[in-house]
Image 1 (cartoon, rainbow, N blue to C red):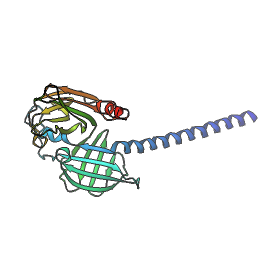
Image 2 (cartoon, one colour):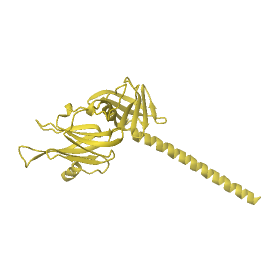
Image 3 (cartoon, helix red, strand yellow):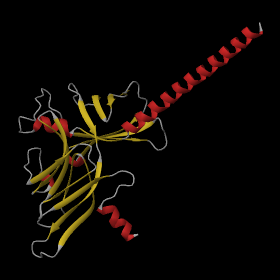
Image 4 (cartoon, rainbow, N blue to C red):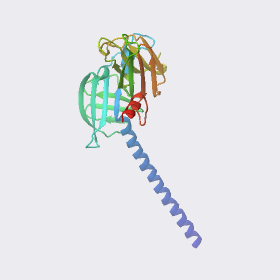
Length: 266
């Protein structure tokens, strides 16, 4: 009897321990999912790649679509006072040219989807797919890719004085069609950073230089030169002698000429 009682007690203890462990794992998994979703949706998203593929003149890259998409940009960020609310800002055009709307939305995500007030967003990794976006036609969903922001600079050797250069630092643009321009009277240079897909097959990130003002650069504008790398790259640059530019992904402890300059000043 004693032996049976001990075995029963041991089995009961093991059962309790396993039950506690399973419950702990479930709670951890749930907490991880919740924090994971918050980390994903908080940020900037742009459908530049979708828009570019529908409007490029290069047939090798072009997507044919019965419903042409507008070029839109979404910013999502947590409300500072209410964790159950987030702010959604919607812009149209390059460099967030026109603000379309601003809304407060509930942050309850269910199985990777947020459905609220004429809005239905689906999360897939770093991609937001809009199946409903207020009064915008989404019969063909909008595909927004998360923007990575880069810190960079432009350098221009002054043609009238070979020993002098114009150095423009502390610039910022994202990799989903972001642009900056050289701020010199009578000088027109624009830098562009984009995530593209070559021939529907090869994903890449491109840094291009245009010899025209930013507000005149379009989807089919021809750059005077460009360079490309993998989409995951954190640093890239270009040197054309008459204009030089370098860019570094903004993340914790990142280092480029801008941060080095700031350290010297301090």
